[in-house]
Image (cartoon, rainbow, N blue to C red; front, side, top):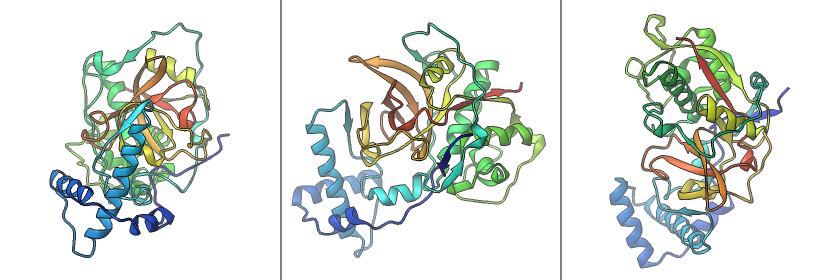
Length: 335
């Protein structure tokens, strides 16, 4: 039996010590100039009351980015759409925190002995990875990890790349211990699609980024799941095999504050945990490789193509970094 996991992409309180520190921050004219330029770039406007708070929060984030990049670590940070928000605010909209029982993700994957290719990138194999999507201010990362994996599985098996309906999972998968914009697990979403007998396309069931009533129409289902491959807890080598031989793999990991401003390079952290009770975000491993002697995963996120490296990031492989091997799975499609 798996340990209880926190609920994927759910919320936290907004104000804490970091927020109070930002409120007391003295902002330079250069920082204000950069903030106003950032506002234009991202189309942001604020009330007169909110502007000083957002300016101070931006300045605090900007200083953290510059300090991090000056240390010349394995990855770089940069301003992005989250730069006017505290980490607590980001957690409340994009990550999970509530307890989640991952019993549906008991292992059924039997790993072989290899060898496996030194690098794999499903994006370069053909039309097997759908474009990066954006979950918006809804804790639905689990749905995008789910559809991304199934879109790839169908494309690999049939040659046809679909775009599947995250909103159906948000609205309809509650009986499988998923909770819409409050979070869920890809493994449980695959089980929902299996027993529900299908998922609709995004064009027929468009994404709204908020909880709604279930509008599933069985006759419009376009993708189906025959089985779910659940990888053994913390068996990162099995994840390598699955990605190398079969399919991109859904996984969860613990996001820390420095990850939110990730831009390039191989992400690693000394402050995140490696236990299944701390993971708080679901994504999709579409490949792996090595850079300057550091092995990494190639990962598709759901925060839009302007975040990170065109919507993707690299994370260190082989160390169960931030618990990434705690809850990995992929679907086997029914054609």
